[in-house]
Amino acid sequence: QVQLVESGGGSVQAGGSLRLSCAASNYSANTYCMAWFRQPPGQEREGVATITRGGLSTYADFVKGRFIVSRDDAKNTLYLQMNTLKREDTARYYCASASRWGWACPTSNTANFDYWGQGTQVTVSS
Picture (tube, rainbow, N blue to C red):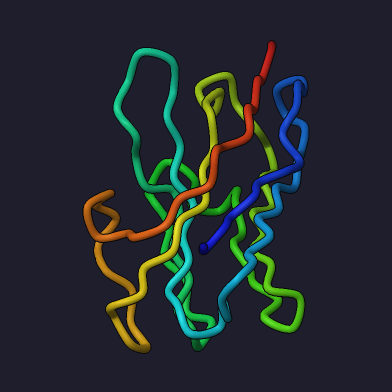
């Protein structure tokens, strides 16, 4: 059973930083596209960032220049460094993996991703 477990969420003031981690188990994460999604209160889940097996990353416009996605395949772990956090970044953050895309990543449509973690809450206050 593939498992993804997020950690690192919490409460932070606007302008602050957090680093999220996603530990993968029961499969080799280096064979998958990995991604971060988030779901703000009362809204749909949306893509935040993706990173391919080769380390190529893409970002949603609303986090460009502030968030950095990275992966350590030796540790089977995905990261999201979040800087200059804003109130509108408040959401539950999920990591996900896509197994059918070879060296590429699909578009950030939740239907393209096969495995999901339970999420970690990030709350940003002003």
